[in-house]
Picture 1: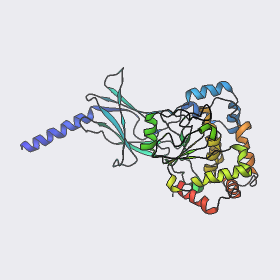
Picture 2 (picture 1 turned 90 degrees about the vertical axis):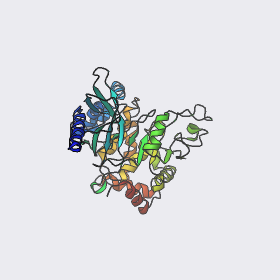
Picture 3 (picture 1 turned 135 degrees about the vertical axis):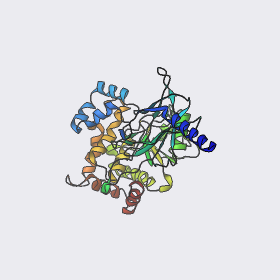
Picture 4 (picture 1 turned 120 degrees about the vertical axis):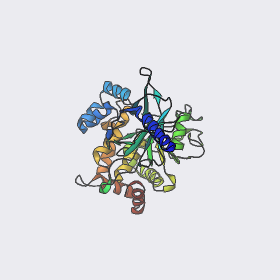
Length: 373
């Protein structure tokens, strides 16, 4: 009898403790997105409107200010008792390898807590719960869905313009895998004198996240010898392979030298041992934008999304010189020479790569790595 009463008391105490946590946001089943509102508005315009806006210096300054960083996904709750909580998120109901994000207390509402979550995969369901780390108690499991709107913008301490190349639909409606190729700015500044490498931009926290969480194995650096100077390895540390291939961009990829350059680059993405990869120049705009256009194009990503992936760098680049007419149009003009207007871009990009010496087997290998079954 005493055992039964004790068990009932423990059960009721646990239920009371759980009831003391009141979830505020997000609601169960909510669809969330890390794309800032100003960037969502920009992406909703048609191509002609976007190209025109890119030439507006004031607009560029505005969107660079409001969409420089991804939007946080906020988890908020009230707790009648307890001081230390985390939000646990997992792609599986049984919480295999959960992400644990610490909570902070509201300064205005003493009993209210919140966690800011970044870097969730797009088009992905996440199961989540609030955990009291002092008692181990957890709330009922809920679910959110991250919108399939691309891009997946990453929050990396010290480095801007970082995003996942994956998440979009490609050939045969297969989604391009995430957490395999990331594009962005340089991890350190360019050399000032061509002799001594520039100082790191990425912080210690950024390095830890890229190596421990994203597990970057290869740092592909597209900068020139003068820009990298005496660099001998990646700012991410000795555990990451640093490959420096000085690269051209835009119309330069169609010369014989440019083709050899991009064939060498493309083959790095055909080797599974190199993944996950971080690819960059200094701004993550021109050289990075060119190789990423080719990579996503040969995976079958639709033209509108290819264009937007290049354009989104306006959030980190206020110069109106970064525009369709002066830059991106040169990629398109060159690719058009590899087929007819009626043929899809993926076919023309295949022909370009083959003209550079890439084989059918290498293209198939890359697609096998990057496209979900």
